[in-house]
Image (cartoon, rainbow, N blue to C red; front, top):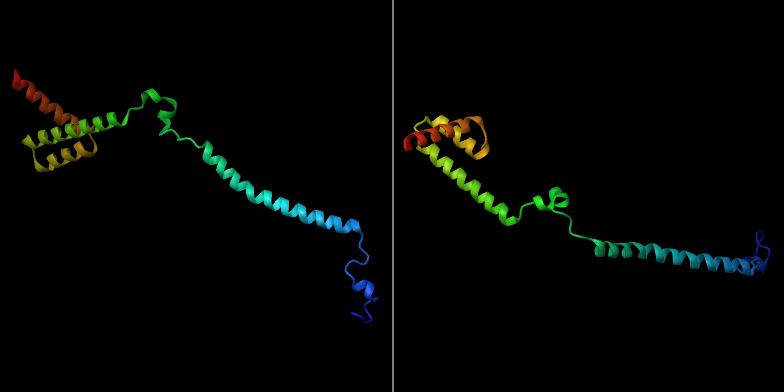
Length: 137
């Protein structure tokens, strides 16, 4: 590039005017860049490995975490569920044996299924039990 904007071959030379210190700094900065890149890229992988090792099975629920002696086992839960189902069937059979209107029977059957502690159902079942007790005496 020889012309009016060039001072000759000295300016065209890449090494012209640069000191050894500038080359060393450039080499060090490039090395630090690669080192930083390698560390930053490998850190997330290392963090993921640590999370896998330290992970524990969390408590099933709040009660199990703080009051483990009050939590029922799966077998107990299934047994209680079977008892509730048997009680529901018994109550439905009792309602079917009553001589009441269809509308009231349907309402009481819905109460047995969806609101087992409703006042209307409690009164009906209490009346049935009273009749049974009177019949036994």
